[in-house]
Length: 204
Image (cartoon, rainbow, N blue to C red; front, side, top):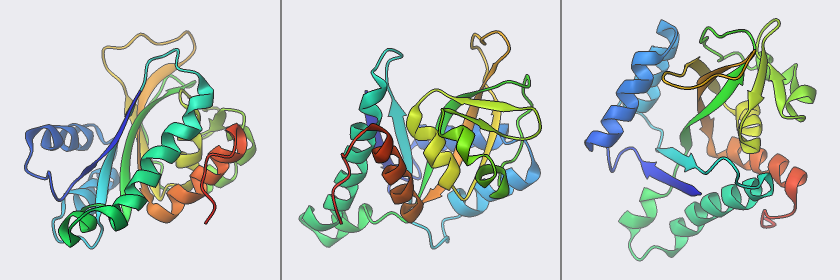
């Protein structure tokens, strides 16, 4: 498994980060989603300190590792704000928001839609706790990684778009899920994940 966070400000001119952001913007399903990406992610004048979460693991990784993996990376970020040797280094880890990219499956054959409305998440919380959620009428979302359902519930806005060059499952279409989530909301999602898989979250 690989879990890391890239500081947007520090790496804003690095080609790999430019390519990722351009790819997401090009595939954003609505103008509103593209504007959100430009305003909060690309605008160098934004007050947000944000990072790109890179999280991948092999298919047969035990689900029980979801919580310790997520707790570990965000704990490391918190510790780095105090433990790094210089103020400049400590400031690099004082994130306010995170951009997350993951994959999910949709049952409706899939038109990527902006998902900024918080009511879309709250009204279906009970189904998401089972690893699925409703994302519009008749559209079931299947989360590949357990933590994504909790991040999705707590995020400020999100959208999906169809994945390319992948093998879909019968009745389901693989899509990319993009989420913008605050540090405080990450904490809530971690608590929910912790309650599902065990006590890995340090006490405050």
